[in-house]
Picture 1 (cartoon, rainbow, N blue to C red):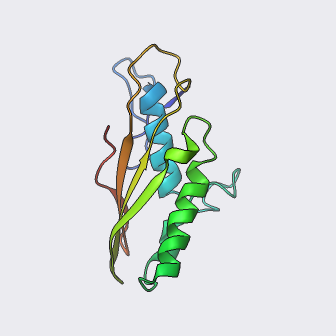
Picture 2 (cartoon, one colour):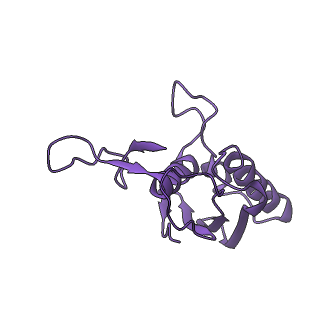
Picture 3 (spheres, rainbow, N blue to C red):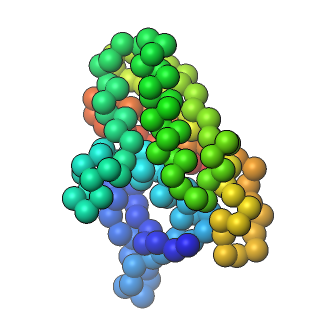
Length: 142
């Protein structure tokens, strides 16, 4: 799979030749997962259901029910990507108060997710910080 490379602000990355840079395989999967997690449902007019909606959870109480709903929402959305092993998706909420929620999302790519013969990582980790200012990604590492 191949897609246009986007920077942290969601803008196209321009290559030295003036064309748009692209991402493939694992980098594409990580970029797609990050964008899914960052997007609010309804933000993409052509894909009304795309996105997780982490913003819904800001200023909600840190209760077991809210934690379960947040975890399940993330798992449900990521499990729709055929390149991710559904059973491997885990969500850890390390902190939650009325100002900020810190979430670590872990998943494993499927064995046949990539075109290139490359080492497929055992696990991908994306660390999100959700606050009133928005959502930032602290990691996206292997």
